[in-house]
Image (cartoon, rainbow, N blue to C red; front, side, top):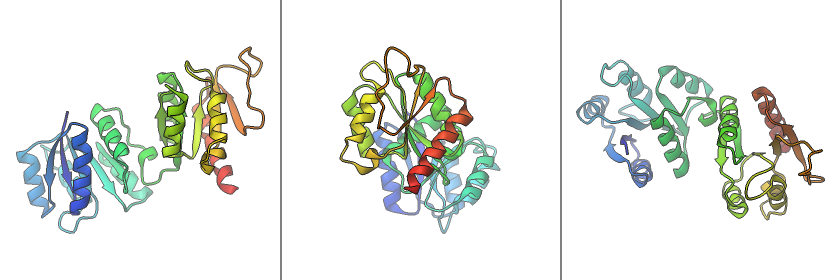
Length: 264
């Protein structure tokens, strides 16, 4: 459990963030941005692990607050998570240079907010374009190997894609997850303990969700088509890469597949 300060001039936005983070077991300090001095005073009097703040606030601009924290000996290392509906790549680069600042684009899904915050607290979240205001797309990563999932997810994040890591426990559950939030592409292992990759592909192609029927799929596997396990991918519109895959090759193929799907 961590202590989190939530700052936003919109009461509804504050209430949303507070509810999400309380549900994850965090202790919340809710702040109203009346002025920069009052916010800094509150952070001094009640130290927190992370400050979650809006960007555009009339009486306490987010960028001014971030710079003030970085110039304050007691707040210079404070983790800051910025939630904003405004911004571009230039802003993302500026925030990246501040150190210990991360950002999510509004509207933010509850799961994305809590996941991002928890990774930030653990020190496992690099500030990169995969979560940024310039995100290139969402790519689901389904693999029973945690090492492979994290490697592929890291490659995607660094190149501006947001990975959605899915542990393949049950075929029906994975299909349901993809239906709830259809990604822009799918990175998929072939041999997994409870089902094979081609089974998931066929389920998606037979789905009643149009985006999943045409979803770009890249099968990344250590098995070749000549192996005894066999591949049943004919007519399923799937690309195949052999493990291990170089990061640049992986990202280039994902980019090519997403662009091709948008062109049709």
